[in-house]
Image (tube, rainbow, N blue to C red; front, side, top):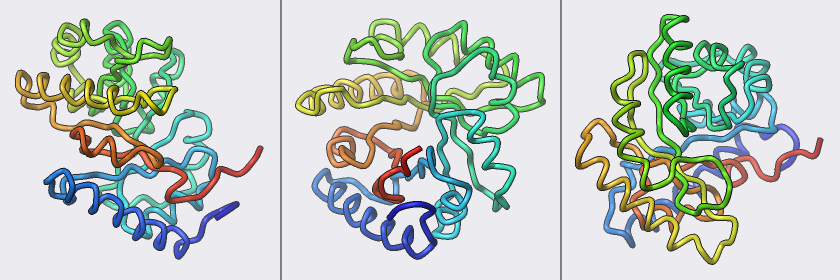
Length: 233
């Protein structure tokens, strides 16, 4: 698929994707009904969002605020649809994130969470949030494992935010994916045991979803497996 994917393109791709998810869940002894697909439409136009919604998906992910705002205005959003922000948070864009999104997956420190809570409150919203954790220590953003409990407790106490889960990005080196996802899965299980409202593990993308599901992912962030390669700029 190239350019703007059509509904039939995405419908066929979604059927194949669900086949992969079902097979991975069977191997892991899990119910595939417990897995949520977030359609990541970064780099595609509003038509990709409309195609995903038409195919029955209700969770849409975007990385960049300006790009998302331009597209969101063109879409007729059905009841129950949720807009996920999955990119790097910037303080000067928090109010617009609060206005445009329902879920923020990339909270990576407590001061930023406090600022996001204030921004959400200013626009009269309460956001579901995930803490982004980084077990790979590779210089990318994310809370270190040893700091997770304290950050989670702080985020859970903030008004206008509901702590719902963890998010993780796979390692830069594919050969480390198994170890990385196993470590995140263990962190998630430990945090969920202590904070029952933490029920979502957003981990795994088009190329590594089987490994993510084997280690407890309940939400997948899927771009290319639904829409094909992103159009070149």
